[in-house]
Length: 359
Image (cartoon, rainbow, N blue to C red; front, side):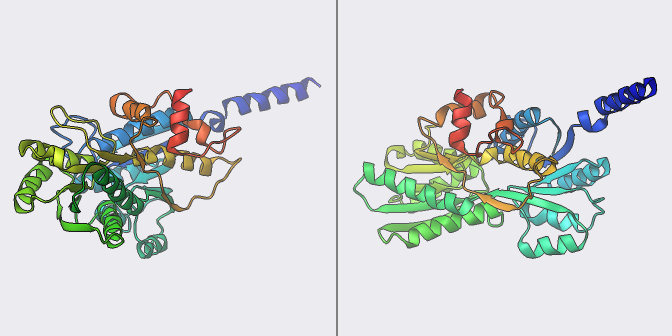
């Protein structure tokens, strides 16, 4: 009897000190952006900085050791960080396939069977197949629905224009770049919208490289060339702020409706944008929730390659959430409530995040 009792205590002790009882998930995220939020460094806005900040909030709630490595907008450094991350053997690796740099590089590496999750930008289906054949263990991906966002921004800008002016709608599009899926798909959504609206005149489109300063210069040039422009569609808020600054310099800000994406805070001395869509900054947290659910033995949620319609307009309801994102963080939200491991899991939506913040 004493031997059985002793064996029982040994078994109980093993369960208590078992690594599985305490082990946190080790996840590495290779962030394309900067660890610093200063405007001098982040000339294209603080999107990537805020993505990391929210992911760290979610990691605290989800029992994750999240290690973030910053590539500082340097694709050569990004490849080196991925190589180092694979050597560190994390439980999961989260990467962004900007301009297909990551997917091309992964095919050349021994990824040691580490599960890889693509965030915001992912390889085309053909590349996915070749990577899997090369032994790369891709478990899933999530991207925002950029096409729908591009279309929605155009629609919101047209509505705003028609409520303030009787003039025909003359749109200028300032794109992010020529190659990234976010830029290409947003412009595709805009183009489709213009095709469906014969009363909209598409004046032209130009790349601003996601930059406030480039947008400022190009807006000045376009307004001299085509002063009839009264709507400026911008691929992100940084571009929008550059356009606003140029319009202020021309004393034309009251004549032109400007919209962007990212929910960025307004730089000092620049008027707020007329429209800003956002919410995609939250997808890093959503990715961590997906990975935890996939890893958990009780749920074993199969991961897939999803495109999430998360873009929302800045409204009275969403302002508190946007202020937290820009000014502090989302530590007041318990992200575990969106996991399948929760007793009553909630869908991951902007509305539910607003409600969670207000609790």
